[in-house]
Image 1: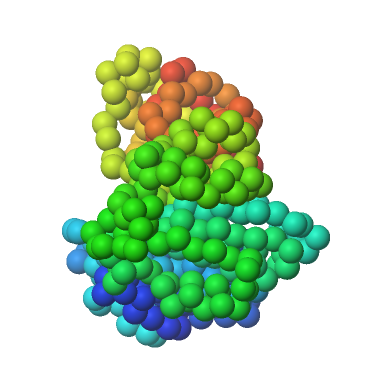
Image 2: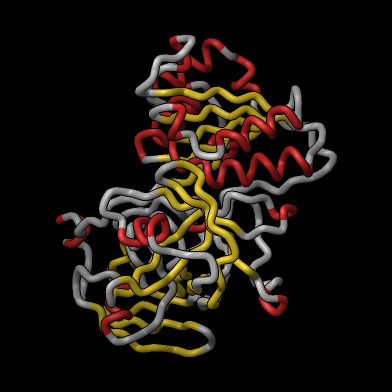
Length: 351
Ligand code: FES
């Protein structure tokens, strides 16, 4: 998966610390940048001499014809600060084609109920899904439970209101605020287990949802999962996407299982030989010999570094991105995978 140089077509200020950025897609890249709702782009640029990559979710639906991501500024975030303060219309960024599985196939004939939980900038892939559903499935309904600190930090506030008005009766929204007074108890606080359980009690129709989507920090995702599983919602009906997880060193028990290894890495039809030290992950080892493997978060979250393990065994330190099915098929996150056998073969070309 390679990067393409794309010009920034538009920068929109969404809140005081969030911008959305649209790219100009030249005709020859139209097909490469065709996307599904809820997918993300990996962006790359050089900031103060350092190459920085980050993944950001698309906030538009495919039918809008606008390839646009939202970037919320995070404290000490190199890329997010650059995007919010320095990036200008007409600048060029290197962009990887859309990736990710945070969506479900849509059909005009569906009559489904979709329930979305979002916190902060977790709204980005959620609004992409909601817009796609509301326009593609005229008989489906959407419910959004959206947690923020205050009204002023609600990203896409006007757009959400406009969608509600346009699709009257098919889209209901509950804004939950943690640092501002609200009209009811239900709408005040954080989206934790108690709050989500409170919603399920007060609005039982939520439990009749056909598909559930959650995007936000790990605590919120866990709270949604636990609360829904306690109500016997099948995990196949729950889709989730996590914010960046912190980069951690391998735990002792993981390290104990690993060995010095030798990897054959297949990428773009070529095979690269990579020595891997005990305790080192495949991606880091490959970078040390100059291999240009795809990656973004290095935290087990974004899935950009996904590849298939063809031979040998690995131990993954963290996996917030691959589904159970993908793991059963042999897919691994190379930024998290430490070899447990002296030889491994990894293929990036198998999708
Ligand atoms: S680089 Fe993001 S999961 Fe590996």
